[in-house]
Amino acid sequence: MKEVDYLIIGQGIAGTMLSWFLLEEGKRVIVIDDAKPNSASRVAAGIINPVSGRRFEPAWMYDTIYPYAKAIYLQLSALLQVSVFTARQIWSVFPSAQMQSAFLQKTSDSAYTEVPSALRYEEFLDQPHGAAIVEGATINLSSFLPAYRKYLHDRESLKAEHFELAKLELLEKGVRYGDLLAEKIIFCDGVATSANPYFEKIKFLPNKGEVLQIEVPGLVTNDIIKKSITLVPQDNGLFWAGSSFVWDYTDDHPTEAQRLILEKSLNQLLKVPYIIKGQLAAVRPSGNDRRPIVGFHPEHPAIGVFNGLGTKGCSLAPYMASHFKDVLVKNAVLMPEIDVKRYF
Ligand SMILES: Cc1cc2nc3c(=O)[nH]c(=O)nc-3n(C[C@H](O)[C@H](O)[C@H](O)COP(=O)(O)OP(=O)(O)OC[C@H]3O[C@@H](n4cnc5c(N)ncnc54)[C@H](O)[C@@H]3O)c2cc1C
Image (cartoon, helix red, strand yellow):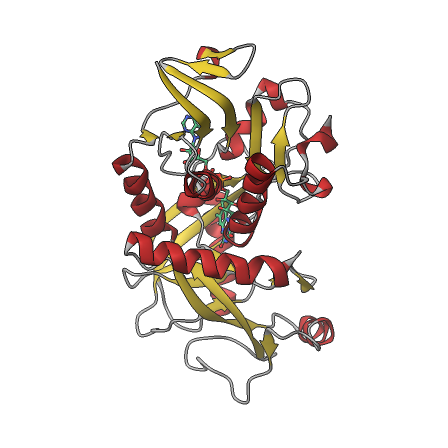
Protein backbone atom coordinates (compact mmCIF):
# COMPACT_ATOMS: atom_id res chain seq x y z
CA MET A 1 0.00 0.00 0.00
CA LYS A 2 1.36 3.44 -0.92
CA GLU A 3 0.13 6.46 1.03
CA VAL A 4 -0.15 9.89 -0.58
CA ASP A 5 -1.74 13.20 0.30
CA TYR A 6 -3.46 13.79 -3.04
CA LEU A 7 -4.59 11.55 -5.85
CA ILE A 8 -5.20 13.68 -8.94
CA ILE A 9 -7.16 12.28 -11.88
CA GLY A 10 -6.12 13.85 -15.17
CA GLN A 11 -3.03 15.60 -16.50
CA GLY A 12 -4.51 18.21 -18.78
CA ILE A 13 -3.67 21.81 -17.94
CA ALA A 14 -5.80 21.58 -14.75
CA GLY A 15 -4.12 18.46 -13.28
CA THR A 16 -0.71 19.67 -14.44
CA MET A 17 -0.93 22.99 -12.62
CA LEU A 18 -2.61 21.65 -9.47
CA SER A 19 -0.13 18.79 -9.07
CA TRP A 20 2.77 21.20 -9.65
CA PHE A 21 1.72 23.58 -6.86
CA LEU A 22 1.07 20.71 -4.45
CA LEU A 23 4.44 19.08 -5.20
CA GLU A 24 6.09 22.47 -4.68
CA GLU A 25 4.57 22.46 -1.17
CA GLY A 26 6.22 19.11 -0.49
CA LYS A 27 2.96 17.17 -0.69
CA ARG A 28 2.90 13.53 -1.79
CA VAL A 29 0.97 13.47 -5.06
CA ILE A 30 0.06 10.78 -7.59
CA VAL A 31 -1.44 11.80 -10.93
CA ILE A 32 -3.39 9.16 -12.86
CA ASP A 33 -3.78 10.03 -16.54
CA ASP A 34 -4.66 8.00 -19.61
CA ALA A 35 -3.33 10.59 -22.13
CA LYS A 36 -6.51 10.78 -24.20
CA PRO A 37 -5.20 12.06 -27.55
CA ASN A 38 -8.19 14.35 -28.08
CA SER A 39 -8.47 15.80 -24.59
CA ALA A 40 -9.15 19.56 -24.61
CA SER A 41 -5.59 20.41 -23.53
CA ARG A 42 -4.07 18.29 -26.30
CA VAL A 43 -6.19 19.89 -29.04
CA ALA A 44 -6.19 23.52 -27.79
CA ALA A 45 -3.98 26.16 -29.38
CA GLY A 46 -3.07 27.54 -25.96
CA ILE A 47 -4.06 31.11 -26.79
CA ILE A 48 -4.13 33.71 -24.03
CA ASN A 49 -6.26 36.66 -25.12
CA PRO A 50 -7.10 39.67 -22.92
CA VAL A 51 -10.23 40.39 -24.95
CA SER A 52 -13.11 37.98 -24.55
CA GLY A 53 -15.53 36.77 -27.22
CA ARG A 54 -17.48 38.62 -29.85
CA ARG A 55 -18.41 41.44 -27.49
CA PHE A 56 -14.78 42.33 -26.82
CA GLU A 57 -15.25 42.40 -23.03
CA PRO A 58 -12.05 42.33 -20.96
CA ALA A 59 -11.36 38.71 -19.96
CA TRP A 60 -12.43 37.92 -16.37
CA MET A 61 -9.72 38.79 -13.76
CA TYR A 62 -7.19 39.23 -16.57
CA ASP A 63 -4.99 41.79 -14.81
CA THR A 64 -4.55 39.35 -11.95
CA ILE A 65 -4.35 36.02 -13.72
CA TYR A 66 -2.23 36.95 -16.73
CA PRO A 67 0.93 38.25 -14.99
CA TYR A 68 0.71 35.31 -12.60
CA ALA A 69 0.30 32.76 -15.42
CA LYS A 70 3.20 34.27 -17.36
CA ALA A 71 5.55 34.09 -14.36
CA ILE A 72 4.62 30.47 -13.62
CA TYR A 73 4.93 29.34 -17.25
CA LEU A 74 8.36 30.98 -17.50
CA GLN A 75 9.41 29.25 -14.28
CA LEU A 76 8.23 25.91 -15.71
CA SER A 77 10.06 26.60 -19.00
CA ALA A 78 13.30 26.91 -17.06
CA LEU A 79 12.62 23.84 -14.93
CA LEU A 80 11.55 21.56 -17.77
CA GLN A 81 13.93 23.00 -20.39
CA VAL A 82 11.16 23.47 -22.97
CA SER A 83 9.66 26.64 -24.35
CA VAL A 84 6.27 26.89 -22.63
CA PHE A 85 5.30 30.56 -23.04
CA THR A 86 5.42 32.75 -26.17
CA ALA A 87 4.24 36.37 -26.09
CA ARG A 88 2.41 37.02 -29.36
CA GLN A 89 0.50 39.81 -30.98
CA ILE A 90 -3.00 38.89 -32.07
CA TRP A 91 -3.66 40.49 -35.45
CA SER A 92 -7.45 40.94 -35.10
CA VAL A 93 -9.14 41.45 -38.45
CA PHE A 94 -12.55 43.15 -38.20
CA PRO A 95 -15.23 41.11 -39.99
CA SER A 96 -17.44 44.22 -40.46
CA ALA A 97 -17.52 47.98 -39.89
CA GLN A 98 -19.87 47.43 -36.89
CA MET A 99 -17.40 45.01 -35.30
CA GLN A 100 -14.61 47.52 -35.86
CA SER A 101 -16.50 50.30 -34.09
CA ALA A 102 -17.60 47.95 -31.25
CA PHE A 103 -14.01 46.84 -30.76
CA LEU A 104 -12.66 50.39 -30.69
CA GLN A 105 -15.36 51.50 -28.25
CA LYS A 106 -14.89 48.56 -25.87
CA THR A 107 -11.09 48.60 -25.86
CA SER A 108 -10.42 52.37 -25.93
CA ASP A 109 -8.84 52.31 -22.44
CA SER A 110 -7.29 48.84 -22.69
CA ALA A 111 -3.56 48.53 -22.11
CA TYR A 112 -3.52 45.45 -24.33
CA THR A 113 -4.80 46.81 -27.65
CA GLU A 114 -3.59 49.28 -30.24
CA VAL A 115 -4.62 50.45 -33.71
CA PRO A 116 -1.80 49.75 -36.19
CA SER A 117 -0.42 52.51 -38.39
CA ALA A 118 -0.46 50.20 -41.44
CA LEU A 119 -2.13 46.94 -42.36
CA ARG A 120 -0.03 43.77 -42.20
CA TYR A 121 -0.44 40.70 -44.44
CA GLU A 122 -2.21 42.62 -47.23
CA GLU A 123 -1.08 40.00 -49.73
CA PHE A 124 -2.65 37.16 -47.74
CA LEU A 125 -5.71 38.47 -45.86
CA ASP A 126 -9.06 39.88 -46.83
CA GLN A 127 -9.36 42.83 -44.40
CA PRO A 128 -11.45 45.67 -45.90
CA HIS A 129 -12.54 46.83 -42.42
CA GLY A 130 -9.02 46.94 -41.03
CA ALA A 131 -7.48 45.25 -38.03
CA ALA A 132 -6.22 45.90 -34.51
CA ILE A 133 -3.30 44.55 -32.51
CA VAL A 134 -4.03 42.75 -29.24
CA GLU A 135 -1.15 41.77 -26.95
CA GLY A 136 -1.59 38.08 -26.14
CA ALA A 137 0.40 34.87 -25.83
CA THR A 138 0.35 31.15 -26.48
CA ILE A 139 1.20 28.25 -24.22
CA ASN A 140 2.99 25.51 -26.09
CA LEU A 141 0.88 22.67 -24.72
CA SER A 142 2.27 20.08 -27.15
CA SER A 143 5.74 20.45 -25.57
CA PHE A 144 4.75 21.47 -22.07
CA LEU A 145 2.34 18.64 -21.19
CA PRO A 146 4.67 15.77 -22.26
CA ALA A 147 7.67 17.45 -20.58
CA TYR A 148 5.73 17.82 -17.32
CA ARG A 149 4.48 14.23 -17.66
CA LYS A 150 8.11 13.08 -17.77
CA TYR A 151 8.84 15.22 -14.71
CA LEU A 152 6.01 13.47 -12.86
CA HIS A 153 7.20 10.08 -14.09
CA ASP A 154 10.77 10.75 -12.93
CA ARG A 155 9.45 11.66 -9.47
CA GLU A 156 7.34 8.48 -9.36
CA SER A 157 4.25 10.67 -9.24
CA LEU A 158 2.56 9.40 -12.43
CA LYS A 159 0.38 6.40 -13.12
CA ALA A 160 -0.14 6.31 -16.89
CA GLU A 161 -3.43 4.43 -16.94
CA HIS A 162 -7.18 4.82 -17.10
CA PHE A 163 -8.84 5.53 -13.74
CA GLU A 164 -12.00 3.55 -13.01
CA LEU A 165 -14.40 5.18 -10.60
CA ALA A 166 -16.00 1.81 -9.73
CA LYS A 167 -12.71 0.80 -8.09
CA LEU A 168 -12.59 3.83 -5.78
CA GLU A 169 -13.35 3.07 -2.13
CA LEU A 170 -14.35 5.83 0.28
CA LEU A 171 -12.83 5.28 3.71
CA GLU A 172 -13.71 6.94 7.00
CA LYS A 173 -10.86 9.30 6.29
CA GLY A 174 -9.62 9.50 2.72
CA VAL A 175 -9.92 7.08 -0.18
CA ARG A 176 -8.37 3.86 -1.45
CA TYR A 177 -7.73 3.11 -5.12
CA GLY A 178 -6.03 -0.22 -5.72
CA ASP A 179 -2.79 -0.09 -3.75
CA LEU A 180 -3.03 3.67 -3.18
CA LEU A 181 -4.31 5.33 -0.01
CA ALA A 182 -4.93 9.07 -0.37
CA GLU A 183 -6.23 11.74 1.95
CA LYS A 184 -8.05 13.38 -0.94
CA ILE A 185 -8.86 12.60 -4.56
CA ILE A 186 -9.26 15.54 -6.92
CA PHE A 187 -10.88 15.13 -10.31
CA CYS A 188 -9.11 17.13 -13.02
CA ASP A 189 -10.40 14.87 -15.78
CA GLY A 190 -11.96 17.56 -17.95
CA VAL A 191 -15.27 16.75 -19.58
CA ALA A 192 -15.25 13.27 -17.96
CA THR A 193 -16.29 14.91 -14.67
CA SER A 194 -19.69 15.62 -16.27
CA ALA A 195 -20.38 11.84 -16.11
CA ASN A 196 -19.12 11.47 -12.51
CA PRO A 197 -22.07 10.62 -10.21
CA TYR A 198 -20.47 12.49 -7.28
CA PHE A 199 -20.72 15.67 -9.33
CA GLU A 200 -24.00 15.10 -11.16
CA LYS A 201 -25.38 18.34 -9.67
CA ILE A 202 -22.84 20.47 -11.52
CA LYS A 203 -24.49 22.18 -14.47
CA PHE A 204 -21.92 21.46 -17.14
CA LEU A 205 -22.28 23.08 -20.54
CA PRO A 206 -19.62 21.13 -22.43
CA ASN A 207 -19.06 22.21 -25.99
CA LYS A 208 -17.15 20.63 -28.81
CA GLY A 209 -14.50 22.45 -30.80
CA GLU A 210 -13.07 21.40 -34.13
CA VAL A 211 -9.84 22.58 -35.72
CA LEU A 212 -8.06 22.28 -39.05
CA GLN A 213 -4.30 22.01 -39.42
CA ILE A 214 -3.37 23.93 -42.56
CA GLU A 215 -0.41 25.01 -44.62
CA VAL A 216 -0.53 28.52 -46.11
CA PRO A 217 2.30 28.68 -48.66
CA GLY A 218 4.32 31.89 -48.22
CA LEU A 219 2.70 33.04 -44.95
CA VAL A 220 5.35 33.15 -42.25
CA THR A 221 4.59 34.90 -38.97
CA ASN A 222 4.78 34.70 -35.19
CA ASP A 223 1.47 36.51 -34.83
CA ILE A 224 -1.87 34.94 -34.15
CA ILE A 225 -4.28 35.98 -36.93
CA LYS A 226 -7.92 36.21 -35.94
CA LYS A 227 -11.17 36.95 -37.78
CA SER A 228 -14.12 34.57 -37.46
CA ILE A 229 -11.44 31.86 -37.40
CA THR A 230 -8.07 32.02 -35.63
CA LEU A 231 -4.74 30.99 -37.13
CA VAL A 232 -1.96 30.07 -34.72
CA PRO A 233 1.53 29.32 -36.08
CA GLN A 234 2.83 25.91 -35.01
CA ASP A 235 6.42 24.66 -34.63
CA ASN A 236 6.01 22.38 -37.69
CA GLY A 237 5.30 25.29 -40.05
CA LEU A 238 1.56 24.57 -40.16
CA PHE A 239 -1.21 26.76 -38.75
CA TRP A 240 -3.77 25.62 -36.18
CA ALA A 241 -7.00 26.99 -37.65
CA GLY A 242 -10.00 27.00 -35.34
CA SER A 243 -12.15 26.59 -33.66
CA SER A 244 -15.83 25.85 -33.84
CA PHE A 245 -18.33 25.78 -30.95
CA VAL A 246 -20.96 23.04 -31.00
CA TRP A 247 -23.27 22.35 -28.04
CA ASP A 248 -25.24 19.58 -29.68
CA TYR A 249 -22.87 16.78 -30.64
CA THR A 250 -22.94 13.01 -30.67
CA ASP A 251 -19.24 12.21 -30.22
CA ASP A 252 -15.89 13.94 -29.83
CA HIS A 253 -14.50 13.17 -33.29
CA PRO A 254 -13.94 15.46 -36.31
CA THR A 255 -16.91 15.89 -38.65
CA GLU A 256 -17.39 16.80 -42.28
CA ALA A 257 -20.00 19.41 -41.33
CA GLN A 258 -17.59 21.37 -39.12
CA ARG A 259 -14.79 21.05 -41.67
CA LEU A 260 -17.01 22.83 -44.19
CA ILE A 261 -17.84 25.59 -41.68
CA LEU A 262 -14.16 26.07 -40.83
CA GLU A 263 -13.28 26.17 -44.53
CA LYS A 264 -15.93 28.83 -45.11
CA SER A 265 -14.36 31.01 -42.40
CA LEU A 266 -10.91 30.41 -43.87
CA ASN A 267 -12.15 31.44 -47.31
CA GLN A 268 -13.44 34.70 -45.79
CA LEU A 269 -10.05 35.37 -44.19
CA LEU A 270 -7.45 34.18 -46.71
CA LYS A 271 -6.97 35.58 -50.19
CA VAL A 272 -4.47 32.83 -51.01
CA PRO A 273 -4.80 29.05 -51.40
CA TYR A 274 -4.21 26.82 -48.37
CA ILE A 275 -3.80 23.09 -47.93
CA ILE A 276 -5.66 21.14 -45.24
CA LYS A 277 -3.29 18.72 -43.53
CA GLY A 278 -5.44 17.47 -40.66
CA GLN A 279 -8.52 17.94 -38.51
CA LEU A 280 -8.91 17.63 -34.74
CA ALA A 281 -11.79 17.77 -32.29
CA ALA A 282 -12.19 17.87 -28.51
CA VAL A 283 -14.76 18.89 -25.92
CA ARG A 284 -14.26 21.95 -23.69
CA PRO A 285 -15.17 21.36 -20.04
CA SER A 286 -17.38 24.39 -19.30
CA GLY A 287 -19.81 25.12 -16.52
CA ASN A 288 -23.08 26.95 -17.19
CA ASP A 289 -21.79 30.17 -15.57
CA ARG A 290 -18.38 30.06 -17.31
CA ARG A 291 -16.46 30.10 -14.05
CA PRO A 292 -13.99 27.50 -12.80
CA ILE A 293 -15.47 24.72 -10.65
CA VAL A 294 -13.27 24.09 -7.65
CA GLY A 295 -13.51 22.51 -4.20
CA PHE A 296 -14.92 19.49 -2.40
CA HIS A 297 -18.14 17.56 -2.43
CA PRO A 298 -20.25 18.86 0.48
CA GLU A 299 -21.00 15.34 1.76
CA HIS A 300 -17.73 13.65 0.79
CA PRO A 301 -14.93 15.96 1.90
CA ALA A 302 -12.27 13.62 0.48
CA ILE A 303 -13.59 14.07 -3.07
CA GLY A 304 -12.60 17.26 -4.88
CA VAL A 305 -12.80 18.79 -8.31
CA PHE A 306 -10.78 21.30 -10.33
CA ASN A 307 -12.61 21.88 -13.57
CA GLY A 308 -14.75 24.28 -15.60
CA LEU A 309 -11.81 26.04 -17.26
CA GLY A 310 -13.93 26.37 -20.40
CA THR A 311 -12.31 28.28 -23.25
CA LYS A 312 -9.60 29.77 -21.04
CA GLY A 313 -7.68 26.89 -19.51
CA CYS A 314 -4.25 28.37 -20.22
CA SER A 315 -4.85 31.76 -18.63
CA LEU A 316 -6.96 30.53 -15.69
CA ALA A 317 -5.21 27.32 -14.65
CA PRO A 318 -2.06 28.69 -12.94
CA TYR A 319 -3.80 31.26 -10.73
CA MET A 320 -6.79 29.05 -9.90
CA ALA A 321 -4.60 26.02 -9.15
CA SER A 322 -2.39 28.12 -6.89
CA HIS A 323 -5.45 29.51 -5.10
CA PHE A 324 -6.84 25.96 -4.62
CA LYS A 325 -3.44 24.89 -3.25
CA ASP A 326 -3.64 27.77 -0.72
CA VAL A 327 -7.09 26.52 0.30
CA LEU A 328 -5.73 22.99 0.68
CA VAL A 329 -2.50 23.66 2.53
CA LYS A 330 -2.88 27.15 4.04
CA ASN A 331 -6.58 27.20 4.97
CA ALA A 332 -7.25 30.10 2.58
CA VAL A 333 -10.92 30.78 1.85
CA LEU A 334 -12.05 29.52 -1.56
CA MET A 335 -13.39 32.28 -3.85
CA PRO A 336 -17.18 31.81 -3.66
CA GLU A 337 -17.72 32.32 -7.39
CA ILE A 338 -15.59 29.29 -8.22
CA ASP A 339 -16.69 27.08 -5.30
CA VAL A 340 -18.32 23.84 -6.50
CA LYS A 341 -20.76 24.20 -3.59
CA ARG A 342 -22.70 26.74 -5.65
CA TYR A 343 -24.17 23.74 -7.48
CA PHE A 344 -25.29 21.82 -4.38
C1 LIG B 1 -10.72 23.15 -29.97
C2 LIG B 1 -10.35 23.77 -28.68
C3 LIG B 1 -9.57 24.91 -28.67
C4 LIG B 1 -9.21 25.51 -27.47
N1 LIG B 1 -8.36 26.58 -27.49
C5 LIG B 1 -7.96 27.12 -26.32
C6 LIG B 1 -7.01 28.17 -26.32
O1 LIG B 1 -6.52 28.59 -27.36
N2 LIG B 1 -6.64 28.70 -25.12
C7 LIG B 1 -7.14 28.22 -23.93
O2 LIG B 1 -6.76 28.73 -22.88
N3 LIG B 1 -8.02 27.20 -23.91
C8 LIG B 1 -8.44 26.66 -25.07
N4 LIG B 1 -9.33 25.64 -25.06
C9 LIG B 1 -9.88 25.22 -23.77
C10 LIG B 1 -8.88 24.36 -23.03
O3 LIG B 1 -8.49 23.33 -23.87
C11 LIG B 1 -9.52 23.83 -21.74
O4 LIG B 1 -9.92 24.89 -20.91
C12 LIG B 1 -8.52 23.00 -20.95
O5 LIG B 1 -7.74 22.20 -21.78
C13 LIG B 1 -9.20 22.13 -19.93
O6 LIG B 1 -8.21 21.41 -19.28
P1 LIG B 1 -8.53 20.26 -18.25
O7 LIG B 1 -7.23 19.83 -17.70
O8 LIG B 1 -9.60 20.70 -17.32
O9 LIG B 1 -9.19 19.08 -19.12
P2 LIG B 1 -8.51 18.13 -20.27
O10 LIG B 1 -7.57 18.87 -21.08
O11 LIG B 1 -9.65 17.48 -20.95
O12 LIG B 1 -7.71 17.08 -19.44
C14 LIG B 1 -8.30 15.97 -18.81
C15 LIG B 1 -7.25 14.90 -18.66
O13 LIG B 1 -7.83 13.83 -17.90
C16 LIG B 1 -7.51 12.60 -18.51
N5 LIG B 1 -8.58 11.68 -18.15
C17 LIG B 1 -9.92 11.83 -18.33
N6 LIG B 1 -10.57 10.77 -17.81
C18 LIG B 1 -9.63 9.95 -17.29
C19 LIG B 1 -9.67 8.70 -16.62
N7 LIG B 1 -10.82 8.06 -16.33
N8 LIG B 1 -8.52 8.12 -16.25
C20 LIG B 1 -7.34 8.73 -16.49
N9 LIG B 1 -7.24 9.92 -17.10
C21 LIG B 1 -8.36 10.52 -17.50
C22 LIG B 1 -7.44 12.90 -20.00
O14 LIG B 1 -6.63 11.95 -20.68
C23 LIG B 1 -6.81 14.28 -19.99
O15 LIG B 1 -5.40 14.19 -20.00
C24 LIG B 1 -9.68 24.98 -26.24
C25 LIG B 1 -10.45 23.83 -26.24
C26 LIG B 1 -10.78 23.22 -27.45
C27 LIG B 1 -11.59 21.95 -27.44
